[in-house]
Amino acid sequence: MIERLEQLIGLRVYPRSVVEADGSTFFLARGSEGKVLGILGDAAGFEGEQQGEVLLCPLTLANAAALRNQLPWLQPQPLGLKKSAGCGDRLGLATPGHIQAVRHAGNIAPILAQQSMRENARTGRTPQQVIDDALWGVFQEGWRGPWGADADHLKTTDDVDLCVTAGYTFFTIDPGDHVDNAAHTAPLDVLRDKFQALPWAELEDSSDDLRGRYLGQRFEVETLTREFDETVLLRAAAKYGRAVAHTARMYRHLASQAQNFELEVSVDETETPTSPHEHFFVASELKRLGVQWVSLAPRYIGRFEKGVDYIGDLAQFEAEFVKHVAIARHLGPYKLSLHSGSDKFSIYPIIARHAGDLVHLKTAGTSYLEALRAIASIDPSLFREILAFAHERYDEDKATYHVSADPTKVPAPGKLADSELAGVLDLFDGRQLLHVTFGSALERFGQRLKETLAQHEEVHYAALETHFRKHLTPFM
Image 1 (spheres, rainbow, N blue to C red):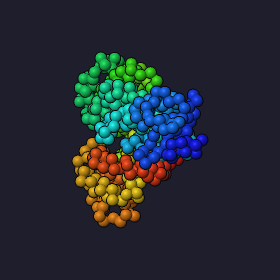
Image 2 (image 1 turned 90 degrees about the vertical axis):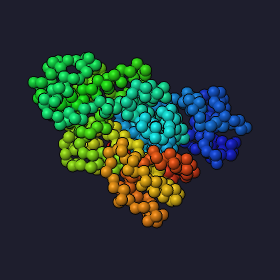
Image 3 (image 1 turned 60 degrees about the vertical axis):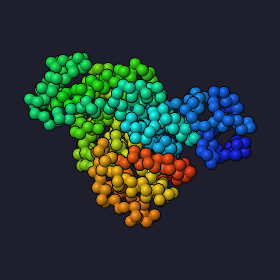
Image 4 (image 1 turned 180 degrees about the vertical axis):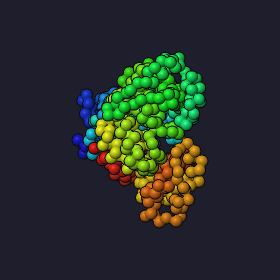
């Protein structure tokens, strides 16, 4: 069949993409001008140009929607409590490489469309484009397993609505703007004032009732006992009370707009760690308000900087993580989500050992870095330009990230031989320098970068597969 299709159209056909449905054959092909959808047979509802027996269709929004209707496995779906990994793709080209890695993992469900509104603004993409780019990658690879689509770090109901319309199935609510970080170290008299000023009507609660539910109570959580004295309770409530109210408001709006969805609650992008007591409080209060979620991302102890390994005491992390797992099992079960999770190789075994299936690993920027690794071997001159530009942009672009790179430790492009360029991506400072400047780099070099990767896609996919297998293997 593949040989016949290639003879009919004179293009290379992706073998895994070929599928028959309702008497028609659908496939993805590639020529000198890019990729096209091919249809042999009834092609009603699709837009394209007839070439003999085959309709060749551009990869448009309309054709993606039509193909999704023909092949239901191209629609993202909820993944439930299955162990999962989010594969953010800022270029819209990485999904085949992600799938090639996931195939080896076997028991890990992928979220193949995952972007935040901040990332979309910096890449110039819409939520619908993110979904459709993943769809074409799923189609190309013939992936039949379930896959998800994560509308990441949502802060407003307008953002929720955009992503519901686009067909997302996994919604990450980020109430970080409503977390009171100052409460983390505030004295008791200040905490009392903050506590009394909480939005009690929105919380459907009163200060007396909340005190009564926690003070003087013993909560048995597997082998742990949780008790709240006044300071611990008021600190948790003052710090997270408004975030709980905002999350409940966002969840209820989402539930009014969508049917088949799942929720993640994320408080990871805050200045202070989430203690086990605070985790228990947040989860208990969300349950009281009727919020249902599949995963929760606390702000763990230590530093989860972008694109590099965990920074902190591993023994201390493990001691705290065990408590978070116990709470997630007791009040759920729900998965613990690991944001800024890429390249945290030193803690993956700890997480896998204690969380089992109750884990969601979220990555994004690491795929962009592996695309640059491919560029370093394919087009050294382009990589040099991007690296030089990153040096110029780093001080400004790092403002919205928790990073600690010292760009003076990253060699200037002119001091590196071609064979040494990819080594920049093995340096702590080099990875962060290139990671946080992605938005500026794509604005200037995006078209060249994408065209080069598209022309050498197997090199790109191989880099992604190698890197992601390192991420997924500890969880197998």
